[in-house]
Amino acid sequence: MALPQAWLQPRYRKNAYLFIYYLIQFCGHSWILTNMTARFFSFGKDSVVDTFYAIGLVMQLCQSISLLELLHIYVGIESNHLLPRFLQKKVTGGFGTDELTERIIILFVVITSQEEVQEKYVVCVLFIFWNLLDMVRYTYSMLSVIGISYAVLTWLSQTLWMPIYPLCVLAEGMYFTYSHLYSERRDVLGVFPIPKKKM
Image 1 (cartoon, rainbow, N blue to C red):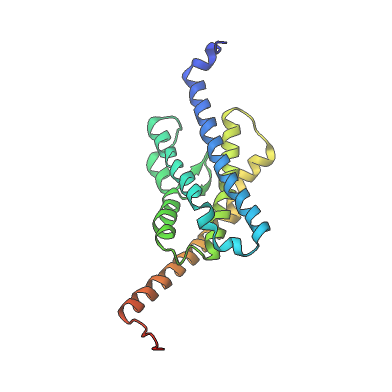
Image 2: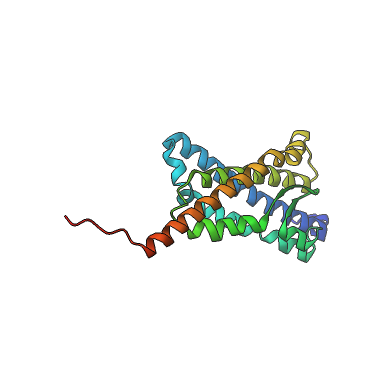
């Protein structure tokens, strides 16, 4: 069965690609949030401690794929300015914020490099906030590409970031504080090692 000629036009191919991209991102972020929720109900507080070990790889994959959004702008698939999007990524329609550069630095440089801090509750909180924002954002973007609009989803995508974004900044600040304290402690203990007791 041959595809209709309309699907061969560049506009439809672009929309099909964006729909698949948003669908993949939505599936990844919803898997992370569902996995975190199921682990919490199964293991309780113990699941929070090993959040990074359980879902860190998928989170890194989703954040790496989100770098494609910069390529989308550069190639012309999405209409936006490249530098502002790199520094502060805007949601389709110009609302909502989550900083792409900040997430990449926090996830790949800070969290991945310090195993002592990966077990802190703040990592779980950050992942919950990031995934909530991205699930709503990618659902809205995916449906808007094919021309479907729901009032509740539009309202959520335009307002959900308002309470969550300050909480993300607070959680990131707490994470950097933990990270700084652990690195200072490691430096001090490296200079002044604690003597071992003889038995």
